[in-house]
Image 1 (cartoon, rainbow, N blue to C red):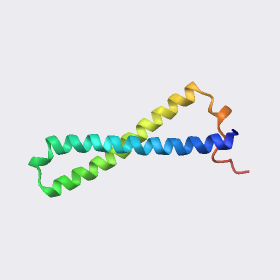
Image 2: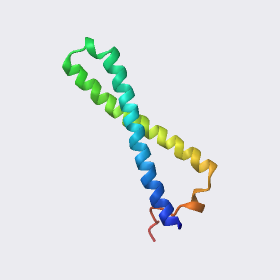
Image 3: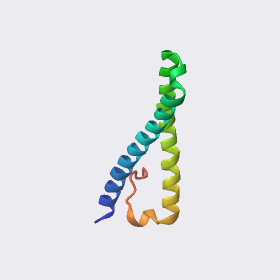
Image 4: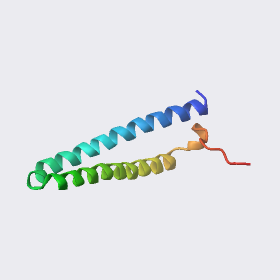
Length: 90
């Protein structure tokens, strides 16, 4: 396989893994909230907390993805296997 195909497969795979990690984090935070905090809160506060949980899962996923890419780039030479996605303007 060439570099372009490797890059495409990596981006697709990383996107799928990123979405799965986000869903898992959201479900874990949701279950913890529903089990321990939700029964004692009003519905309006529960909606705000759900929004915070959703945004928090996105932020946590970003940090996990960033750390994983940093670790992978230190472990492997990315330029050897992948084509740059964005080219510099001339």
